[in-house]
Amino acid sequence: MTHYLTFLFFSVLLMVSGSSVAKTLPDIYDGARTRLTQLNQNNPDHLEREAKAVNHWLQGPASLQIIALPSNTSNGEDEYEVGVFLPFRPPKGRELDEQQSELTQRFIKAREKRFSLLASGLLRESLWRRVMAQTELEGLQEKQKWIDSLDVSIQKQSQSGELDRATLLRWEQEKLSHQLTLSQAKIALNNAKQRYREIAGTQDLPDSPQETVIPNIGNAIQTHPELTLLLLSQQQLNLNYDFADQSLAPWTLGIIARQLKGPAGNDNLLGVSVNIPLTGSDTTSVNDYALWRDASNALNGSLATTYARIQQQLSETTATYEYTKEAEKVLSKQVTLGEEIAALYLKQADSLPKVVWLEQLLSQQDTILALEKMKVRRAEAASKLNQIAGVAL
Image (cartoon, rainbow, N blue to C red; front, side):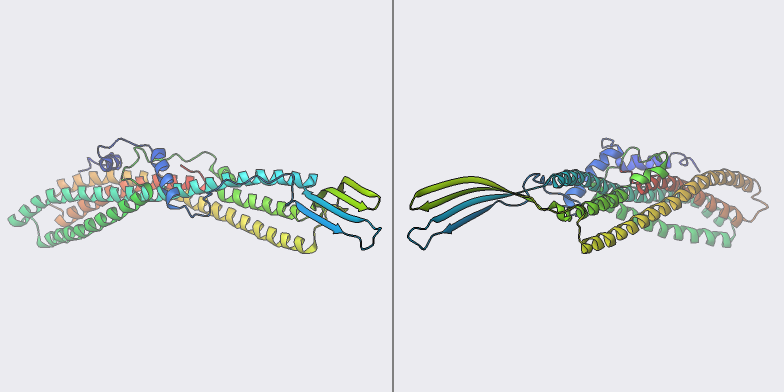
């Protein structure tokens, strides 16, 4: 009666995979991530172009200046001037440019990690939804075999008068109820398969979908991609505030050619000019400071809220994971006790109402299925813990 108890969960995976080549969970994930990347070309995290390096020297376009000052007297001098002016970044500006370039690369990596975590979450959700649906259907199909086998005996007992009508009606009621449950399980599995294929791009299941909960999971959330992006946003905000400093006004280098034409002849001049703004440090405007302060407070609030949300989710899922481990042990003991009770009832068949014996058999079948589903719930909870901690597949 319980021959499928130990290996049902694993046989589900093998039967669904069929004769195809076994794939690992990372293999399935790689395919899913590639597929999701193609489906999310317009995703805000998708970067189609590489970030262009900031020009560390010029702060703007070069400018051309042409001056013509002809004299209106016969002995006067005509003056012509052509100048090219280049706005250069001050040393502090070049340092900030290097910080911006480094920060941009860190943003790219953080967004990639967040997208990987998103893809992992979608795959994990669809995978365990399908495994649970498959486990339930397999369990119900095993119960249907048991029902078909027992039905032959019950019908014979009913015909011979050994079984009272109340027990027979209860049995017929259970068969009808099971048919509906089986139909619902088939629908649920078809929906789960469709969802899994949409995410993974295949119907193949990994040969071993179980994940091991990472050690020190409480510390792992410190590097969660969502928190990392918020911290980088805070750094970007501070950098933008530094860029607004008026002391970063460009230094201008001018190359000037001047010609003086007069009665005594022409005088050609070539020289340079250097324009350095005389500003002090920390010359950011009050308005810029107010904008920075408000944005910084908002980011700090988002950081605290996100961290608290992740901590709460982690705490709740940890409790669920511990419960599933305990429940699995309890259900396993209940199955063992149920087998013993059924055997005792069978020995006391002459003195016990048949309906009591039947209810025990039905309860035993439900407990067996509950145990198999609890195994899946435990594995799913372990996977969810890794997801909440920000660990991608």
